[in-house]
Length: 147
Image (cartoon, rainbow, N blue to C red):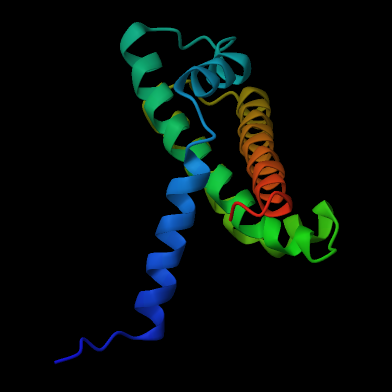
């Protein structure tokens, strides 16, 4: 008796396999350093909050990295980075909004609009940096035919 699988199941298996391979390129130290680089200058340096912030930033960084790596296939086929980034702008904005709202909720930073705008731009830059790194790593793996 044969097992019947659908195309979606095969695609999902292939995607998971690719995600696992590309995540080998990330290190915990890189993740920690990038969080400190983007968010350590805040007035929210409590030890408990920094642990929570780090964990949520790791989640968003991994998602942005995988998003960039998955969209690197368009770069492999000749699209520019900007065009490929435009294709996933909705997903990237969702990641930025998620991180921003998480920090606002748990950070209890107040109602300073200027600070909130600055924080949003830092979240946007953080997600963008991870997306670009994932894109570059994915493109590199495709060139080396490791995908």
